[in-house]
Length: 256
Image 1 (cartoon, rainbow, N blue to C red):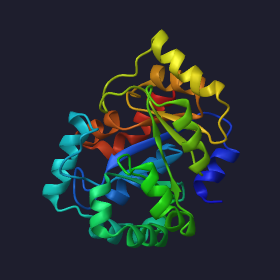
Image 2: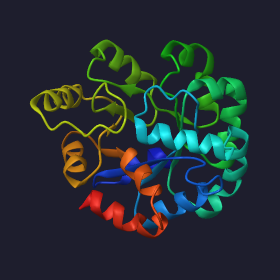
Image 3: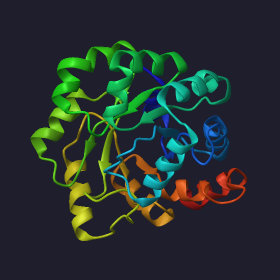
């Protein structure tokens, strides 16, 4: 059982996760941001590794990825930065990004390195499920890494059941099929989708992401799942002056 599993097992109140892009706003800000998030009350962190063609991301995260790449962020540099991760951060940490950089780095090397620096889980939205199951599952499990799958409103029940069987952390529910940064729709359609997933009584806990930006949307997500993931709203904060001084205030605004 890794830190992520422990969190979902023991935490009773809604869980808040924060995403940010490694190498943004500065190349070497990764651990400072992670530490500020833990001190501010985040339950777990998702560190995005930038990619040149982030198709699922909205303009805010796309822009942060472009800046990070210009700053020189790469997977080898990120892993070098994360060598001191567990000296400064104790909450669960996940890495999130596209499959192309992982394949270039080597999936086995990636998993080994992630485990070595103390990462608890991986989110690679465009890694096909059949490839994970047939080629990489043992590598993830052997390194005690939770592989997090994504579900959209269009995902069939059959596929969701399959994902649930392959998961060992949580299932990431996209609030919609749009890109990141769009506000969570508080509508009958969204309610129906979230209720449908909840009624499936899945083995794994669920979290909602895409469009969580304030207390209202966080509370809405927590009605149906264990909590929510905030990305674009936090990355937007990081683009402002003295952002690290306001991380605690930002998290209190989300939690209410």
